[in-house]
Image (cartoon, rainbow, N blue to C red; front, side, top):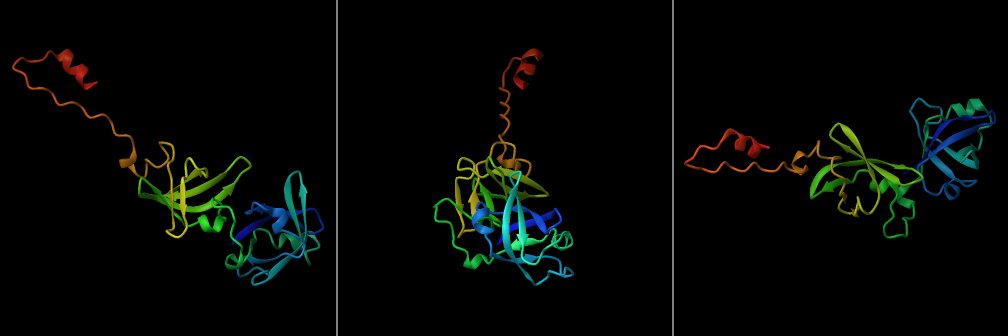
Length: 202
């Protein structure tokens, strides 16, 4: 399970700016916490772990200090590394309507029982979380709120969405609001004036 990504070196003493994939950074990145790394095979850190020595906040941005990373060169060798923990040993949220990102990623999004896409990631913002749903060749950003995502079924691998009109109609045109049907012309023995025919078509 991803809990963070190392963005760029901060200063000259090995600090690294951190992108968070967790709602509890102060509990997650405590001194002594150990993380596996997702890095390319050619990276000197491939197959290794890192240990946290300190998490600091600069202008509301998290900055991480790691054991053995003592200068800017060491910090830059870790840029773009993903920090991982073992999801199988992770305690699940106690709240009934709370999920970790890794539980949501991969779920099929259903609208009116029809699959409209797949959750590819969860973006966290101060105002609300967003589900990023891959649908066709594009991504749809869907607010993760009860009114729009009324149910999540982890066992079934699905979640139900009731999005505003316009988000998925390009993929599922049959879900778009249909155009009113044109009334059939009534048969008559008297030919209708052309003006009435124009009004009926409008």
